[in-house]
Image (cartoon, rainbow, N blue to C red; front, side, top):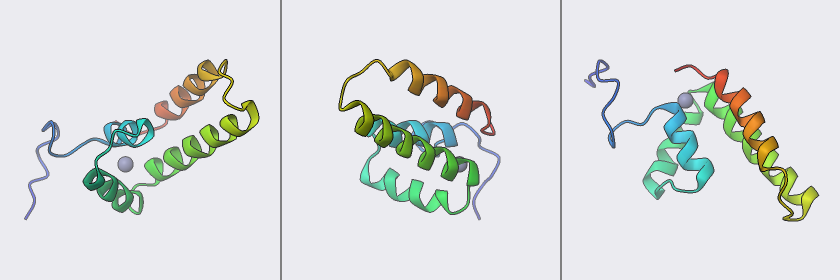
Length: 87
Ligand SMILES: [Zn+2]
């Protein structure tokens, strides 16, 4: 039976935000990607945030053709999303 009392064990169980950051930064290992995908089925905030961010990045990349100047916008939107996530 898993112990649900440990809330902060680095490297073992990642929080939603940590997982999202890894995935969105492309730093997640294959194992972490699997865990995250399974997690998306159970965690609506992560599901929404992840899909929104991916869609956003794709949209911006397509529209701007690699020209920057939108990083600020991405961060702004990402911050707003983050505030809606449970901690
Ligand atoms: Zn989550």
